[in-house]
Image (tube, rainbow, N blue to C red; front, side):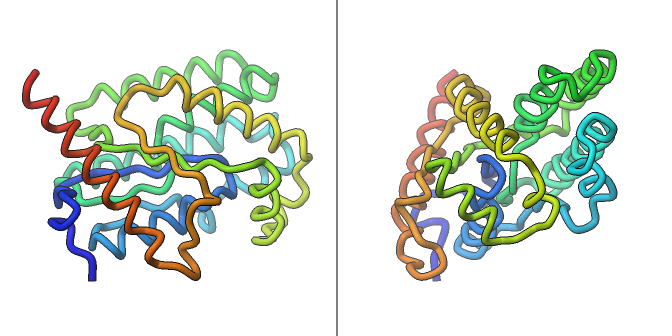
Length: 224
C-alpha cells in the first residue's frame, strides 16, 4: 500500500490529469486515486446527452456540448472545494476553453456569439471563491500514432467515425496549449515511459515527482 506521507503528497492536494482524447487520462486518474486513497473527479461520458450528436454534427452541437461540459466541470470544482481537496481529476476545465471551444470557434463550427458567451461563463466561474486551482497538472503526451492506436482499440463508435484531420488538429492544439499553460505547476509524462496495466511499479517515480513539485510549489507560495 502506498502512503501519501512517503512521497510528501499532502492529503488535501488537488491534481488534474490533462491530455488529448485517448491518451489515457481516466486510467491514470484511477491509478493515482487508488495509490493515494484520493477521490476521483471523472468526466461523464456515458450520461452526456450531447456527445453522440456532437460527433455527428460539430456545427450544430459544439456550443451545447461545451456548455454541458463547463457546467459539469464547475459542479465538480465546487465539490472538490467543499471536500477540501484530496482529488485526482480526469481532464481540467482549462482544456475546455483553451482547446475545444477555441478550436471550434476558429474552425467555424461555433458561432462568434456562442464562443463569447462561453468565454464569459468560464471567466465568471474561475473568479468565484470556491473555484480551486490545481496544485499540479499532470500532462500526458505521446506520439500521434500511439494515441490513434488507443482510440481505435477502445472502439467508441462516435470516435471511429470522426475524420483523422480532427484528431490531428486536436493533437497539435494540445501541444501548443501546454507550452503556454502557466496556471499551476506541470508534470509532463510520456505514455511510452509507463505501463499501468502490467507494471504497477511504474507509478512510483511519478509519485516521487508529484510530491517534490507540490512541496516546492507550496513552499514558494508560503514565501510570497
